[in-house]
Length: 58
Image (cartoon, rainbow, N blue to C red; front, side, top):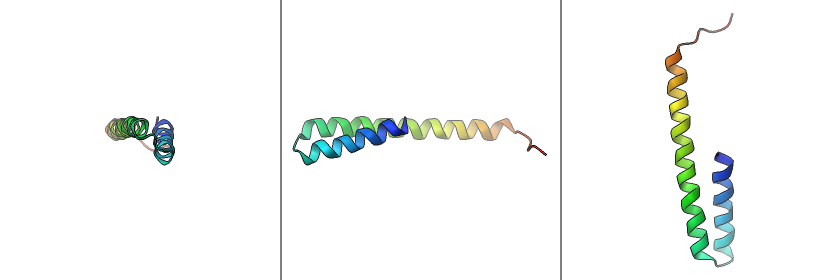
């Protein structure tokens, strides 16, 4: 999902360079949403992993 967000961000920069402002803004908006979804899922996974309380392997 993070790769998709980065890809959309790069495409929006490319479209902005060539003058397609509306498409660039749309791609940047989707990339921003995907990035924050990725960060939220990472935080949830980190919290769940910390609360599981696994014992270290010896």
